[in-house]
Amino acid sequence: MKRKERVASQRASELMRHTALRFAPVLDGSMGLKNDSGSEFEDQPSPASSDNDQDTTRPSKQPRVDPKTRGEPREISCAVCINRMLACGPEFLCRCRDTPAAVSCYGCAQGGRKCYQVPHAALPHARTLQEAAVRILNGEQVLNWDKLAFEAKRAVIQAEKNPRFVPNPPQAIDQGAAPSPEPSQSPPSQRSSSQTPPSEIPPTRIPPSQTPPSQTPPPQTPPSPLPPFVLSTLPVDGITAAIARNNELVAKTNQLLRRVLGEMGAFTRGEEPPSWD
Image 1 (cartoon, rainbow, N blue to C red):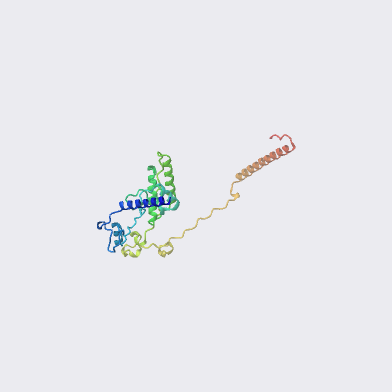
Image 2: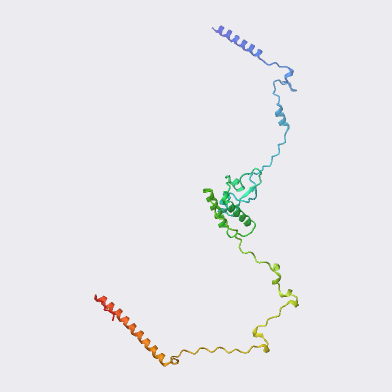
């Protein structure tokens, strides 16, 4: 049994050796497997790796271009920037972007939002609000900024709900009263008399208290006061008639008072009020 196993193992080893010699690669000088050191089967560097080993300089970094560069203010604000200006102020006005292929404005690009355009009916309000914001940034004064921003937002909302809606025209930008001109810019009519030639100086008007004695007007007598009313100045018949009229009025007044008191007493006692005489 052991002999058979030994013979089988010898045959298997011979078969393996024969197979290895049969499929072994041909080693000659044309394969380039030998180098100067005399070692065989040494891997040669690939052309790509040799180029990378020789090029030690790194490529220069290209400057990054920010696609959200802030540009000049737009002529008409978008709907999103109108809300931002109403909430945050005129500093957040609608601006363009310094990118040729830009679609949204600078504010919407910074926030990652979609830039909604204003409806056609609300364009005058958006244009007026944008102009007011530009004036404020230039140092000018706008007194009705809050009202302009509120009206612009309301016009946009109503126009989006109803395309046929026509809002009222926007208010004009109120910048207050114009500043008074400087003294150097005053008109010639307001110049001081020191700059007027002596021949053109008008004569000085002397007040009445400083008039010369020769031109003093005569004194005016004050009007006499009205005499007090005296009863004795009336005629005798008039006095008698006045006294009689007064006595008649007093008698009628007393009669009316007695009538009122009698009715009150009868009401208190539960009786019928007396009749008029």
